[in-house]
Length: 513
Image (cartoon, rainbow, N blue to C red; front, side, top):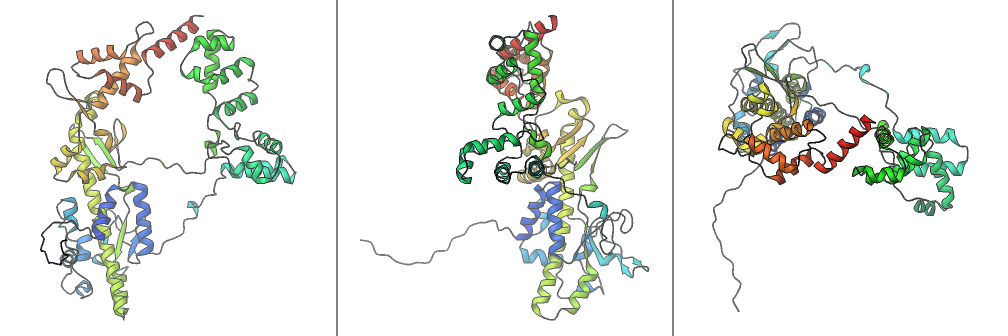
């Protein structure tokens, strides 16, 4: 048996060490506008040296002065030993922020100007923003709005008005708790009855009461019951409509022949009944949803110039505007007595400087990526979707000298407003479909658009099968397989040729009747 021994070995290897500051810079890249605003808000609460810049504060159109905050000038208080220079910070961290983005470092210096009215110099502030004041934050009472009542709150109000029976109210409150945001009762009634120790009939009585509340259809246990409640409220629940509700799977398959027999109606009545079902709300609770719907705000604007080129601009309204209060740091640093206090103040300054520089680099990187995307997709912006080119992350990354992962983070949750509408940045990255004669490849998104145009233009007597679409696309120089056409068609939620033919013939017969 071999003995166990100890020995020393020298091994050489490489490893990527991510400092907290670098992790912060990378994290900021992939945050959306709303997430970035939340992150900066948390930093403002945590770091006393950071200040928010409100609209109208300071001079108009100031330039970022991040460099002035970290490079000491002759005779300036920044030369204090407790304030590390940019080089010292990067040396301590083992790397520089600019290496993360592989971008050039800004070299613009802030001019030192005195403001007699405030008694502050321009170099006593640094950061990214459109103003440079140190006023206290005023309360904006117009920003306070009354909270909207949720679906559960509305149902509870109606419950107290509908009945004075304490026992029925208790059952009703339990049932309301089991109703989800869409308005459906998701819990089994027998389990509720067992938990409350009441007869099942009593729980069913409570559910019947709740199903009379607004919005109509609330408290239903499935889609059929939800639609049935809404039709009953409209006095449209006749035997034919009840039969249609009991056979919704046939309607989904467009089996109109079977539905006509089951419902005992003609083609015209069946089409009218189907239209009436479509007018109902399958999720009535969502109209009282308590969740706030945030509008999509573009991060970049693309506008056409008079010379035919494209002008790419950042949406400055979405950029958090924060400054580093250097004057406050000077005051606090002088009053610091213990090493712990000095270390805390120095860490706050370093963190604030890193945040402002990270925000500036984030904005520059987004602009650089957006500019290259516009250059690659000039045909789409000029002529439309048919001219959308196939594009991948590597192409953009190589063109701007960045890593693919950086481009991927930049394009996540970012939106571009163009003359053709607003698009997510990732929309412009599509797979390539080869050409039949060795020409330029076609974008998958453009091919989807062509398939949809073909199907929209087809007549009831000449419905295109997937094989016919493949043949037409190959005649246009697009080499595509049948299964790919079927996948794209299903992704567009377009039925098969058999279902489309049946649907179009039913519509045509109802129109001629």
